[in-house]
Picture (tube, rainbow, N blue to C red):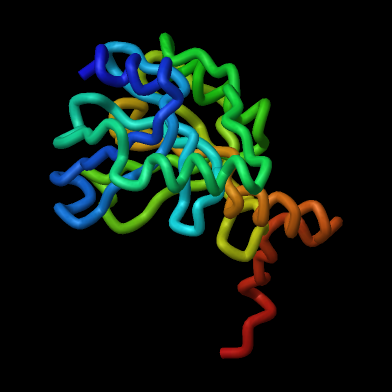
Amino acid sequence: MLIELEKARTRKNVVRIFREELDGPDNWTDGFVIDANEEMVLLQVVDEGVHLNGYQIVFLEDISDFVHPAPFNDFQKRVLELRDEEVEDPEVDLDDIAVLLMDISEEFGLITIHREEVEPDSCEIGRVLRADATTFELEEIGSDARWFDETFEYDLYDITRIEFGGSYEEALLLANEDMGEDAYEIVEDLDDEVE
């Protein structure tokens, strides 16, 4: 598979990646291969509206099928060209996942982490404050664009997918930056609650 991924990268074609065990048989990701090694592949995602929409890293062991070129490769490439959207390398290194998480957080502000084998219906979004050989510490941001008051530690090897630089992460950062003093979650004082 690594050879085919490298062909797709060199030819600048859209690929379609399936992860049937994690996503089901009817879901896939279309994107351009930016980089790949024996463990993971970095894609620049082409979304359903035919826009480049951030980056996704998936693990090769989770890929159940891989189509190169993707079914609508020529159409997608033409639309992106007409929209002046160009594939860009975010220049992150796939060799060390702990360093990768820190670099993405520093460069892009937010990272979305999926742990689908332990939490199939949710993901964590935030910035990685620390990462070592087995765990990482995440300062999370909620769907209301406020930072949580506490940080959370997770197992590095529970990660099944990483996303960053997409429109949702950008929207959260934009809203959070606009909040000023209200950028952190509002914690109600339990003593003030009416019984």
